Image (cartoon, rainbow, N blue to C red; front, top):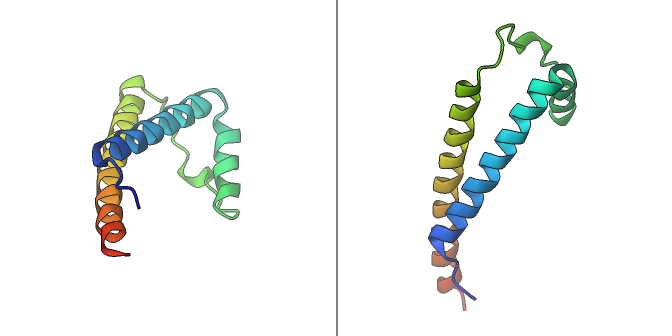
Length: 92
């Protein structure tokens, strides 16, 4: 089996999660109720209206979330690729 590039997988996952977070923030800024309804359906009918914030979304706070999730994705990708490479080389 081929080894995965640890940094490449980390960057790819970090960028993917960062983009998903950015699109989610954009969707929430444009269609707050519809976005909450979608994620409520995505979570098997959980009513998220109780956790809806009344404060306006600040761009800095949204950017903080995008960058934070990107970093979490980078770390998760590095861990995933590292474990994959150990498992893949151990099997014949």
